[in-house]
Amino acid sequence: MAISHRMMLAAVAMLAAALACAAPVPATEPSGAAPEKPTGAPVSAPAAAPTEEPTAAVAAPAPAIGPETAADLQQVAQIDLAGETFTALAWSPDGGLLAVGTENAVLLVDPVSGQTTAALPVGAMVSTLAFSPDGHALAVALVGEPPMVRLLSVDPAAAVSYDAINGVLGGARAAAFSPDGSLIAAAFGDGTAIIFRIADARPLLTVDLADILIAEGLIAAGDPPPPIGAVAFSPDGFHLATDSGGMGVIAIWDAGTGQHMRTYTAMGIIAGPVASAQLSPTWATLIWVSRGSAFLIDAASGEIHQQLSHEDWVYGLDVTPDDRLIATSSLETVNGEFQPVLKLWDAASGAEVRLLTGFPSPPLVQFSPDSTLLAALDKGSLTLWGVGS
Image 1 (cartoon, rainbow, N blue to C red):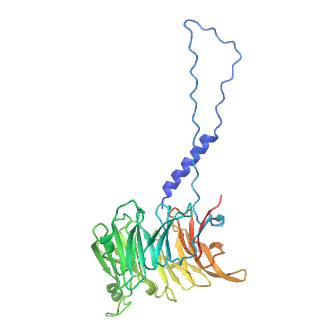
Image 2 (cartoon, rainbow, N blue to C red; image 1 turned 60 degrees about the horizontal axis):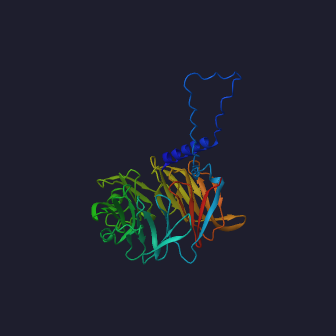
Image 3 (tube, rainbow, N blue to C red; image 1 turned 180 degrees about the vertical axis):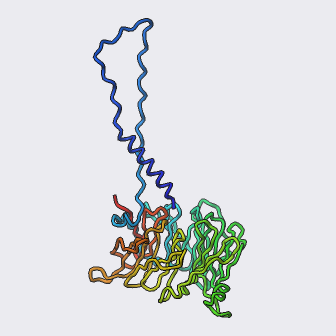
């Protein structure tokens, strides 16, 4: 996501190292000839060379987690969060906070100190979490009848009220911020998704999945449409994706006009029921999870290009921001014992490149925005993994 920024930091680090290690230039040796006698006015002694300030050391950026570095992954922290039931996990955009959803609150955790910096009560079980692009707000989807989405202020010093937008998000099942943070898309149980302007809670457009499913023969006229379970803006903000959940249908819409652009369906591609579906961070790959498999679908052609197989259901899944590495959690037989595992896969080849064990339950997983850390959240703790030196 911030590849150019990391390259710039790496260049700075290399320059600093070069300056720190460079040997001083030796003074010119005398030639052996006698020095000439000065004539005329005395010549002033040469000024002393200025003393160079020592160059401050620049820490090298942490290596990104990818297919080439997965073998070097090491546990770098384990944060005890015992006593809670954990339901959702999200990194802040700058990687400085982890939001953890529980049965009735959102915990904000500092990944460096391991301290819980805040506990935000929400009064119901958290199903999904999403930070705003500036990291100042958090969209919290809550389980209930009806479900709802609430925007919470993450920064206590920021006097921002979300009462207006929260007033129109009752009944929403999930939400996503636009890349510029000015809009929020909300998914509803009646098969619609609405894009609102956050500043004044004004609805800008509504998309209706039922019309598309009827037109494509996926449901009959008069049948109730499936609820929209998730929404996502494209990286450029021009398009909106809606996921029908277990029906295995993802529809793509123009985020400015609401015009339907494309429909992806698992029917005829995947034999089993679809537990979840999502688009990769770059939107190049569609991922359908069915029972113990994660199917990677090329978004351009709509064809399967990899199948990641597990013994049991896939419980957690995330993709690095560059789409190159996928993390999944499941239950597998390892050394004769059926146990929770976390697997890392090369997205291009479908090869398993790392297996992590020792979890009390299959964890929720999420890569940090810069791909330098992998967070795994299970029943008792939050574990962070990074590439060792």
